[in-house]
Length: 410
Image 1 (cartoon, helix red, strand yellow):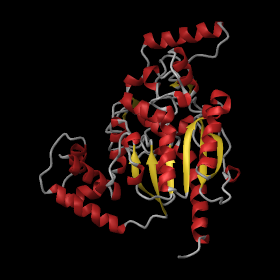
Image 2 (cartoon, one colour; image 1 turned 90 degrees about the vertical axis):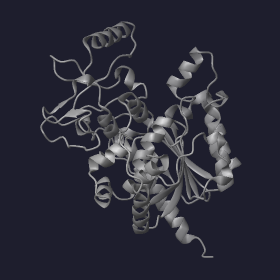
Image 3 (cartoon, helix red, strand yellow; image 1 turned 90 degrees about the horizontal axis):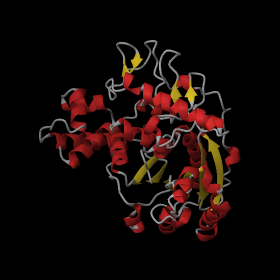
Image 4 (cartoon, helix red, strand yellow; image 1 turned 180 degrees about the vertical axis):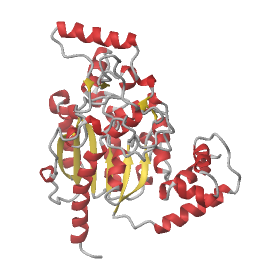
């Protein structure tokens, strides 16, 4: 299947459903999935048929309330939130090939995915109302700074490969002048280099670009069973009275891990896309490969004991159904130590499965995971907690709608 046919297939599915596409083409859903995975090749007529399905469904789609672009898109967590409040994505940029694959399978864009943002000419970016960007956090994260210091490398804005990518956002805002933007990064951005880094960001967005901004560090534990603090910066070209004080945050601790763990009582949903990759529905058990080996479990226990003796807090995080987990990180694939699910006294704990990671980040079960476990762990560990941004998106969209209503008619 050619790249264009794959894109059309994904687009048709995103605008309707896999079952509907299968019905229209007269094939099984399994056949559709095999085409998506490039396991088999369809007949030549499929391309024209997919084009007709995609165009037909596009005419049925409601007009968007606003248009947005998705920069440093990852696997589309922020996009998902803004689509939920009536937005339409008109441009996507993400450099990682594996993230592009996951993003493409789930969104099937007809506008494609641009790669390296530094090579994107700002004038070619479509007009949009809101710019979204979860720009790279490694130069500002506590772990990232520690690692770069140990290697004798620069961090923050001095990091040549990632730190300056903020200014690619700036040049697009300067060129396209959207009504609003939303930027996301790690909590440590606010305190990096004794606050000087964040001062540069604030001055650039306000004095340099003329936007009114507000920002807040939000813990995802208000919405999902995971402590995950991230800074969210929202800016409007005109002062519309946006304030994070208006953001409604549920009480922490109300969402517990049992909500996202696979159900072993027979109620675990059968997900066609997963096809038993993570859970055995016949025995109602998580596949054994996610249980830690005796060697790894002993190593983690010894490591934790050694640091306890030194008065350090390093060690694994053992959780159960009534727990709120630590932050899921991109390194989770290495040993899973920050979130290990207890399985009783006679059995070693296990890692979360990629599907459980998706749920922990607030992605619906309809979200497809087309990559390996290792890649999936990295992608969800680098993603955003979707419900946090759904709440913010509602507030942003409300202010944008009010602004459009009050604007003088031309």
